[in-house]
Amino acid sequence: MDKRKLLLEAATKLFVERGLHATPTSAISKEAGVSAGILFHYFKTKDDLINELYVSLKKDFTANILADLDKINSKLGKIRLIWSNSWNWGLNNPLKFKFLLQIDHTSCSVNLKEHPELVENFNLFINMIQDQIDTKIIKEIDIQFLMNSMFGLITSMVKHLTEFPELRQDQVFIEQAWEMFYNYLKP
Amino acid sequence: MDKRKLLLEAATKLFVERGLHATPTSAISKEAGVSAGILFHYFKTKDDLINELYVSLKKDFTANILADLDKINSKLGKIRLIWSNSWNWGLNNPLKFKFLLQIDHTSCSVNLKEHPELVENFNLFINMIQDQIDTKIIKEIDIQFLMNSMFGLITSMVKHLTEFPELRQDQVFIEQAWEMFYNYLKP
DNA sequence: ACATTTGTTGAGTGATTAGTCAATTTAAAA
DNA sequence: TTTTAAATTGACTAATCACTCAACAAATGT
Image (cartoon, rainbow over all chains, first blue to last red; front, top):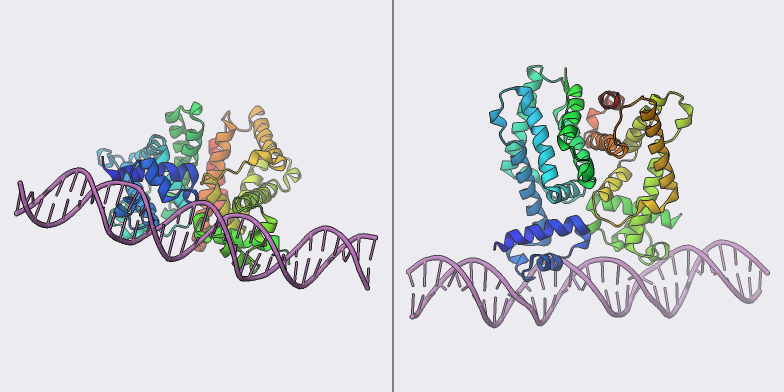
């Protein structure tokens, strides 16, 4: 029974259900089934909890979307894998996914650049794309822009499929959307 | 000096800058340059203010993206116009745009379906797309899914262009992104 | 001119919240 | 076993917040 973990999970659930502004720390500890005080044993402040939760989920996400990348040889295949990895993580972790989205759209003083693990994965992605541009596998394009478009597209589609699960022939959508996106990336 | 309007504008700014959870009503009235009490003359509660702000901006947005639609005859041209209208509204109203995004990604008990004006515009859009599917101008696709993908893509790109204005050859991006999306829509 | 409504103020209130802390339990080390 | 350290509790506090209200000002109608 790792109470720290219980707190983080309870927080994720409540933040997504009610929003940051309507989730007191007392509700979090109650949901986690622990005392009110222990929250401040593991986290200095409420903001600190939000921060740590966000960073840990972001790490979870980036680690997962880069999984098995070395098993693919084709350069294009690598982007394609990242594409479906992101998609699958989103569909398999709807709560975590919604929490990340929520924070990404709120001013929340979380500085991701302080976390070397994240910066490293981020650079890995950037370098990979740059290499693909250099070798003319994809067209000349601002990489940040590409990244945001890509995740923006995935995000909105995953959000929709999570809301309307009856639609889910997941893999079909992944494939179709990928084709659209690759059409855009082609030189 | 419409104090109601001043309050809404101040609220938009502060909500975007600090987030809902870190913006007390006192800060809003201070930013607006009015007394603390008057906020509750114009809005029953803080949530009520958030609600009214959101609905009014959503109306502003939908009204604008459907503007001049009757001046275009080509069916495809109509979607294309909605595309660039959305894009332009986002770029021209960055604060309002970010606020809408923020609420859309937070659980906030705002019920848009209570507002006939919004429902009407929403149906207008849906019917237009359905007609285009029927006349084989675009492919068979779940309309809600199409809508979310479309606005998801626009959203992420607008967000990026707002953050990095140096990139902005706006119209080029609008055109390129539209081509990608149309490629997806083609039967 | 007066009366009536509407807009505006800001000090005040009760409720809620983040965060503390002394006391107690549990676990680990010696 | 004894000692020491770490985890856990929940009542408590100080601060903050949403919201009220009595008093006043401005506008509007008669």
